[in-house]
Structure formats: structure tokens, C-alpha cells
Image (tube, rainbow, N blue to C red):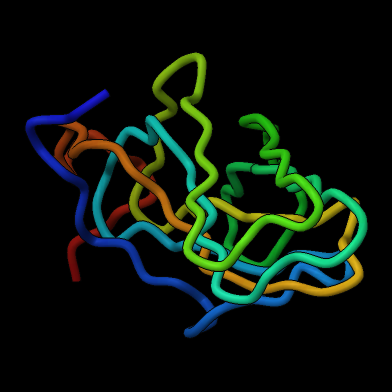
Length: 138
């Protein structure tokens, strides 16, 4: 699936490849503009060891806080996946993320070793800051 307009205005909370050898939130992308998330991807940089990885993907109204988060789906990464492999999942519905909200990647089942980048793909949402109650002009 290809998109005519790619998203922009995302800021990852942590730079560089993230380990999937332990559980917990590994990455969180904060939106700088309103967007629709269509696909999530994991790019393997270090081969995964024994044990498949399960990643829960959530939308968070407040970055860094699980309060009020909504499940968007999950990503399954097979054990022994080679470096350079890209594992992606298309989301069933396009999820709108407002300015200041985030998408979090939470590893709920870890591999013995492995690391990579968590990515988001989608498109700009046609809304404006005027339509968002929590975006104020200074």
C-alpha cells in the first residue's frame, strides 16, 4: 500500500535502535501536527535471538503516560529475524493522532536479544489547529 502524502511532524522520544530483549515501552512518537496512522513498522538492526517479540501499539493522549491510552493493534516479530528485515502491520482503520498526542510501542513479550527502529507511516490529517481544543495560540 502506498500513500500519496507522507506524514511529517513526528518526534521520537528516544533516538537510535531500541532493544527488544526486555519488556516495556521502547519508543514513543509525539505528533507535531495532526495525522492519520496507517502502518507501523519495525526495522531489525541486530538479529533477534530465541523467542518471538510481541509489541503492543497504543495511542496516548498525554505522551509518557498510559492514562487514557487506546490500543491500535500489535506487531509480531518472529524469533531469529535477520538484521535488515522490515516487519510491518497495516492498521485496520486510520487512527487520527492530534498535535501533542503520541504513539507508543510497548514490548509485551521479548526475545533473548535483538534491536531495531520503530516507525510510523501514514498521512497528514486535513484538520487544523483551530479544530483542536487542546491547541492554543500564544
